[in-house]
Image (cartoon, rainbow, N blue to C red):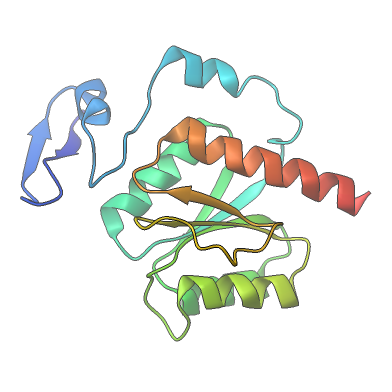
Amino acid sequence: MYGWGVGRPSCRQTTRYRDRKAALAEPVYGLRHVASREFALARSKDEILENSVVLVVEDEPIIRIETVQMLKDAGYAVVDAPNTDDAIAILEGRQDIHAVFTEIRVTGHLNGMELAHAIAKRWPLVRVVVTSGVPRADDFPADWSYVQKPYDGPQLTGALRALLALRSTVAN
């Protein structure tokens, strides 16, 4: 089985690995994919994770693929979109999306923050996690979560778990 590891973000050089574990251990464009035993144990039979569908909106394909894999490894069902236009279409067509994870600087008619505001208005029970390489702004809504790049699996799933727990208390 072949896996892909990518060198430093600045050099954008691709290296092919024969060992999938070696490929997953390599940082990918600022992401630190955690394939540790602790991370696998952290997802153990959590009711919040069961039937939770997360929409990942990221225009960089490698980052989107790694993020989707992190979330799948954590037990989430994942749908992905390369831009905000596709994300809106997915949200309009599906009723099972529980959370959206979006990059602030993403392509489409809306940027990631505008997408998050549109989600808050049209789908108030859908939770939003926003990411970017810049520090969080002060005017960030309290019911959203922010994960700064580079992020890893436990950071992302911790933010989602907290928001989905809040969603389940609001829905009940």
